[in-house]
Image (cartoon, rainbow, N blue to C red; front, side, top):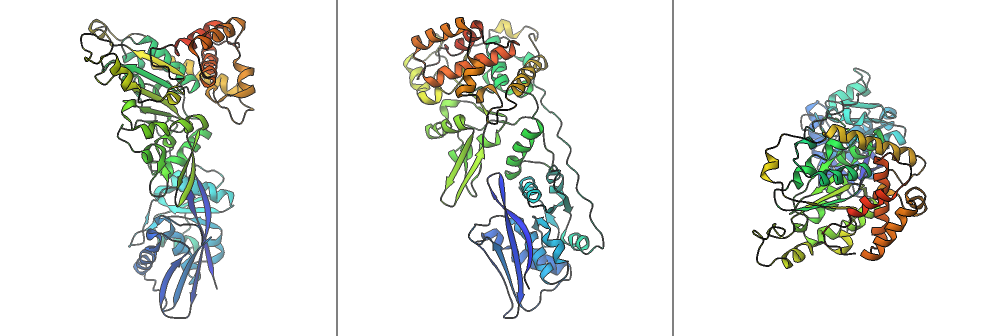
Length: 505
């Protein structure tokens, strides 16, 4: 008679149910696993056999066949160890079959029978809740999975504890959600001397999730400004925290189930590959743009990234999702991130300083920034120059607004947007609006529209650029507490489009 257990196979942030069937039949002694298992799954038979032996459970001299259904779907990962062991124990009538069939399990077995934590406990709990099953997982993964309130999570230290739980000898208590990680961001905007215009651009970008390009000489404070952006962003909402944590769970970035309300801040090095940025590699894992979902992707030395890597950002910026297509996997990940890019004006970095610029100025700047294509540059809502700070300003005491003061305005502006787009499923912030919704909420007054029309004609703005100016103006109006987009809101939005940064539209 066939015994059944259930687990999951991961496809992006979703988890597909896999039925683990086990049959013990007469024949030559053997232990085989079928159903397109990868190497890690095929090796499960040795880990399961040794773990059972450590519990003084001997396998019968019969043929043991484990089938992973659906058989045409590839199975990857070591988390299949525990469900295979459960199906085998049920087939041997050591634990009740009906209890196993109401459980989704995942976990890696050590040779001594202890359970090792695996990635993906949070998406697995979501899939278990949809199938109306409880989740069985290793103890370190229980706090993470327990955040899905609709699913009962049983976290076991080892296989022996699982057997005692299902046999009723020592039932395990349901796991509790892990504590939310505390905010560790201690960098304040007040530490930045001068750079008031760049701070203003940072505030606008944070309020509407707009993409920002900063260009300035080395040491002018671009990286320092970007590092203080998390301090002015509001915490993740419960729904956003769950979305982001599911991606981080698949990447193995959640520590002991601690789901954080802090927005992600990812800063890949400019030598990162396309697979590292967009996603891919073995198993089509999420890349930096997905790990930055609902947060910030900071790309320092932006022109130094390979051209092919930069060009792959164009579609995810527009759609908010990325399809990682490989020969054996097609996986879709969400990636609504705020792109903050920093660059020097030229290779030597001192194009604006005649005494220090190289002999190729100004063509060196055109060549260097020419690595950023026009379509990609057109996707930046805000562009700001970050000039060098004088030595006299560096000696001044900290001044200006703190991150807490700016964060309050940003939070208020985002709250206004949350109310405005409450009934809009495809829009959360001003950067998401388009079409008739954009016309309805962001059309400026007569004076503002006249100004924008003149600027668009003079600069030859693309349709994308025109709409991005409107979105930024709407965000500035929200920061100003204004229901209508007025001329001065449009003027400020346009001013961030009139930077000396090369216009490639």
